[in-house]
Length: 247
Ligand SMILES: Nc1ncnc2c1ncn2[C@@H]1O[C@H](COP(=O)(O)OP(=O)(O)OP(=O)(O)O)[C@@H](O)[C@H]1O
Ligand SMILES: [Mg+2]
Image: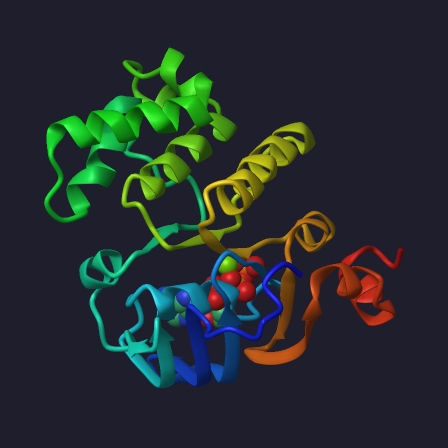
């Protein structure tokens, strides 16, 4: 782990309970993301992984506990305010505006952040194109015409236009070919390692996400089950049995 987990966490979740209507989904959940860290959450379908990200992003109406970002409570904040504090999200599923062009999708990301000048927007779009050259070629095409992997690049690019300190990614490789999964994850690692943006990623592909993350949490039925150095969890017999096909 590169950060040692000794400095103050960027994101700190403590004793988080969360409900949809009367049904409690998260039970006393804790989680930390430190500056420059890549952290993953793994666990079976319905464990509450997406619900954790939604709590951080202000999308859950009924919750209890602590969600601190840079030491300040964001638990009751609306998404547009959470964004201004430096958190962006790539939600589960293709989250592009299909009838807008690739470039328009990226520009939308910039408008969400405060006080953007068009010159700086242009500069930021150029940086996204440097990272995803495919998007430069396709910039004037409707995003809905792109392949699944390319659409995921647009969604990630749009989230980066906000210039986040913390990027939340929900199942970024879902439904992509093995090769495209690898490409997307390489980019996520680059965003984390090279650009220094902290990443909290929820991922079905436990092997891939554990191999690339610094720290990992295993969530089951809305409870923390296991956590630790991601590479160590990759070798943990319990994790292997449950999530790595018994390997
Ligand atoms: N909007 C909603 N209203 C009611 N229940 C919901 C809602 N969204 C999710 N749930 C329920 O909350 C539980 C946790 O869902 P969540 O989407 O957080 O799980 P997950 O770990 O992300 O699963 P998956 O791997 O399938 O994406 C599930 O039982 C789900 O059915
Ligand atoms: Mg989910």
